[in-house]
Length: 82
Image (tube, rainbow, N blue to C red; front, side):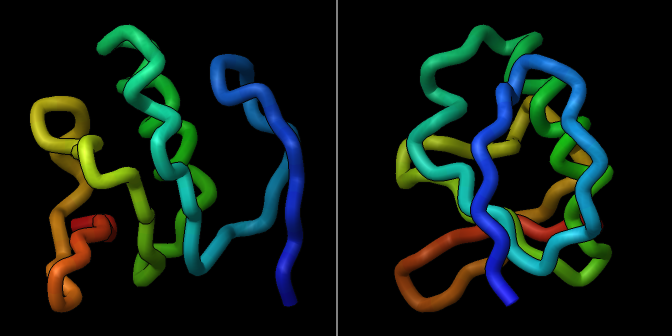
């Protein structure tokens, strides 16, 4: 089942079920470092422990949130919770 929602990433998330995959591609590049950290903190709450976070090619969680580890899939990199 796929569920698409529009939410404001800078505000408290509405009640959400835990997710297997979150695509947050080319979004974090527009925010200040502290806002990025807050968004990733919220993402951790809704990402399943074995779920994956996909960011844009120029984005990373490194130096923002140590709870995520990069996972290589061929040429693609995504992140999962440690």
